[in-house]
Amino acid sequence: EETLAMMLDMVSQPPSATLLLVLITGCVALCKQRTQLLPRVVAALCDLQRRLRARTLGLPPHQLANAQQSLRSSLLSLLKLPAMRSADSSLAASEMELASALRALGATEQLKQFYKQIGAELPGEGPQEGLDAGVDGGKGDG
Image 1 (cartoon, rainbow, N blue to C red):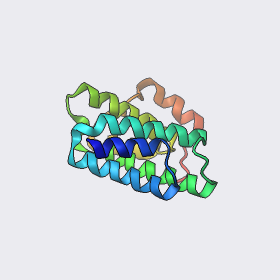
Image 2 (spheres, rainbow, N blue to C red; image 1 turned 120 degrees about the vertical axis):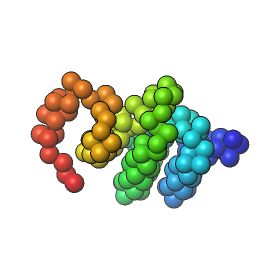
Image 3 (cartoon, rainbow, N blue to C red; image 1 turned 180 degrees about the vertical axis):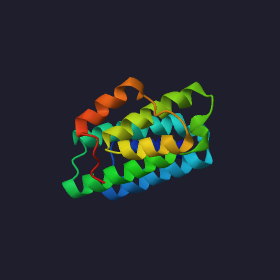
């Protein structure tokens, strides 16, 4: 609990891009071992996504891109945890938050593929799906 609190505090204002990458990976590893930590970690990592997007951490462009890629990969791995599809309402909210953050990180296609693979509907899609496809013309950059 103390380790997680310290890590989440450092994620909010990382001293370096390298440490940020280590913290992201460490938080995800803790969640894989203790799924009850998912809501706190998801909230912190989704907040990090918003700050990276707003460029408030002062990272140079190449480090920003690396941090975003690491975060995208980490958020996808959290989403794929079986615990995310439990009946727990706090995890349902975390799943929505993850989906939103992943869309903002440009991982919409990965989200669609994952939900198609598990036979579930992408959170927050429904009638919005056509609108999302219209924004980027339904094409992915890869």
